[in-house]
Image 1 (tube, rainbow, N blue to C red):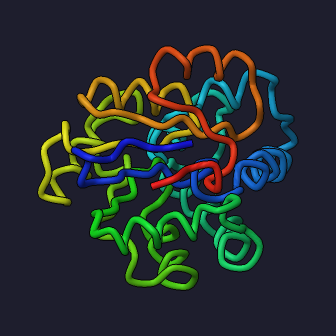
Image 2: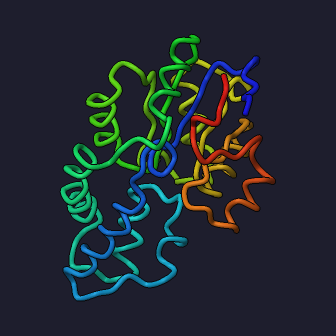
Length: 217
């Protein structure tokens, strides 16, 4: 599958579910964390929090589950539960790391625009793909999470590029919609074969991929 990048200088990637296989990690953490308080994960939780920033999620958990922790404490708890797993157990998605290096060789600029905590993401790349990312943006530094376009616009600014010169890789409807609102092209990454997501992705993205090895550049 050929990706037209003639007028694209910046590649902006979401992290979880887009570049790395970490979504099951977070489902597990939700069960572990709520279980500490004698609670179970409601069926609608994943869809409800999709696209929220780290800060938005902690405040949502605090309010919905009436947790005896401040939002800041909840965020720290999540980081403590997830950090070692990211550093030791979370792999890149098939072909993703190789694709990043191909972009670098072609002189493309690369940024991360994630709802995850910035420190974890930076440490991950410093360990597994050093000197590959030109800019990091996480939704915690914005007023709102995806589908608000702010995190993508901030990423473009960090790369010194206009939105029209950037393309976004995302695995959620909220992310793809945010990219469109930012005036950027997008590639949808099929993380779990969800039919509802794939139908929406067809309307918002240039192409849909399952494996980065499918892409020619």
